[in-house]
Every structure is written in structure tokens, then in C-alpha cells.
Amino acid sequence: MQANHLINHILKKSQFFDHHRDVLNKRQMKVMQKMFDAGPDSFEGGMNATKYASITKTSKATATRDLQYLLEQEVFEMKGGGRSTRYFLNG
Image (cartoon, rainbow, N blue to C red; front, top):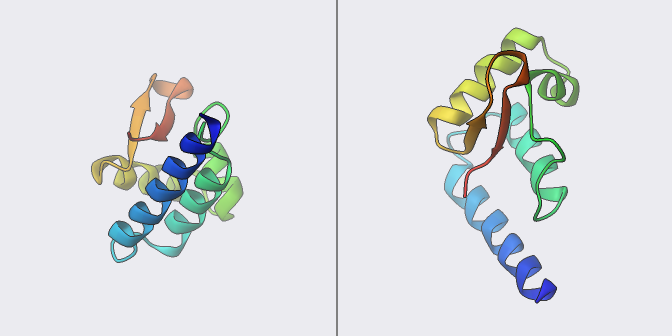
């Protein structure tokens, strides 16, 4: 059962990068790679602007803009609000 879960995760990752490689910038691709590498259960606690800024070495404002773009592209789904906003892989 766990093998099927892992195979599905790998397929999802491959399909994601094939589909989004032309619409995401290098920062966004770096974060997505890190999230997929975290495994099928995604990133612990989801992604937020602070984590994003730390991973990409950018400002929190840039991180927020990138996260908003990923949300608009339906890459992420958002949970919570304000300081507790978290982003999780969609699907």
C-alpha cells in the first residue's frame, strides 16, 4: 500500500513539473521541488511566507507575491488567514 502511495506521489511530481515549468519562476520551482521532496505528506505545517522567504532568500513581500501567484495558478490551496495562513499542495 505504501509503495502505491509513493508511486502516485512521484507521478504527481513529474506531471506537475511538466505542466508548470513554463509558468513558474526559479524561486517558485525551488520551493515546489522542496515541497515534493518532503514526500507524499507534503511540507510539515504547510508553506507560509516566512518559510518561503527563508528557502528562496527573498523578502517577505516577494514571498507573499509568489505565494499569491501559486494560489492563482491553483498550485496551492490556502488554509487559515492572517498570520496563520498556510499553503498546501492542491490535490
